[in-house]
Amino acid sequence: MAKKKVLKLAFIGGGGIARQHADYFSRYDDVNIAAVADISDDCLKHWKDALEVPGYTAYQEMLQEVKPDLVSICTPNFLHYKPSLDAMKAGAHLFIEKPMAMNSRECRNIISQSRKLNRKISIGFQHRFEPRVQFISQAIAEGRFGNILQSRVYYHRRRGFPNWGVFGQKAQQGGGCLIDIGVHALEMCWYTVGRPQPVAVSGNVWAHIGNDPKKAKNVACQWPGWDTEAFDVEDLAIGQIRFGDGSIMTLECSFAMHHEEEGMNFTIRGEKAGAQLDPLKIYTDDYGHMVNIEPSFIPETDIWETKIRGVIDHMLHNGPNLAPAEDGLAVQQILDGIYRSARTGREVAVR
Image (cartoon, rainbow, N blue to C red; front, side):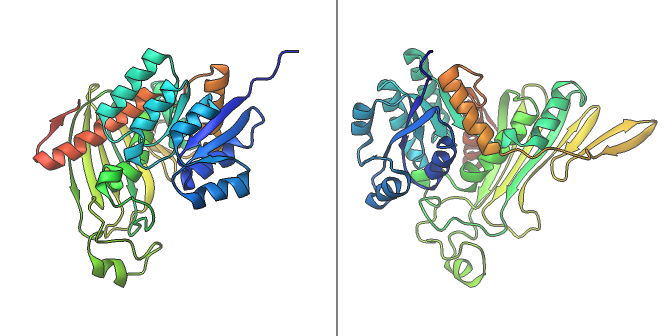
């Protein structure tokens, strides 16, 4: 009997998102969580005590000694790039938490190196696996919407600044709400409409609450008391993306804004039909009338389980790559474009 394949997994970065990854990876007997690297002794103690995973303060030492098959990159955004390159040089494939990197140049370099070294890369996108997203994307792929004309997607928090980590620091994150939570909304809607090629972007970003000490202390919210002095990123971003197929998409996201809409949602308009994600509705013409279709049952799915199992099957068994690096690059190009447009005050070409 052939010996069962087991994926040797290591983590660079051991914080909250890495622990969530580990929770799912540990459910499968074809994965061995071999090591974690983090600069925090407290973090490494948690992994040792709770998960019985050995830790390293230097990821380079971990790569050399452990020789993992797959490395999960779960560091702050500014530490995605070099560890990704180093892990591939050490022989590992990559699972990179979103966003793929700080900018599209870094993304392209990571992809170029992966092709030279014959390494696989998957990106930590999970909202594309949401059952309602799959329902709409399949209908679009089958031609039921005709050509897509316009979509609007948002991820809004009325007052939701992370009061931990470096989420408010541009040098470490590359931006604020846009690169942190807007990336989720963008990739979800972009995937749903068929992953069209972006060609131009316009947008703006604002910081009007996150850097105000009075607003941080005097308004009750879920995560109060964030560091306003260190906060130098946007708390509201809006962009419009033009695609090569003639469609456009409006993206909105906020850490803080005076509005009723919260959470993540989208609407899509096509020649033959339109859709709304939440609550799920299809708008079309039938029986000689304008009709709204609401599915009576959509099965629930653990999107994290789908994501993690997909990564394992791709890395270990050559299954399909459900979130390839090229998707990470396309999303990053759009994010870069919105920031560039905000700086220049004009529409910019995607590059």
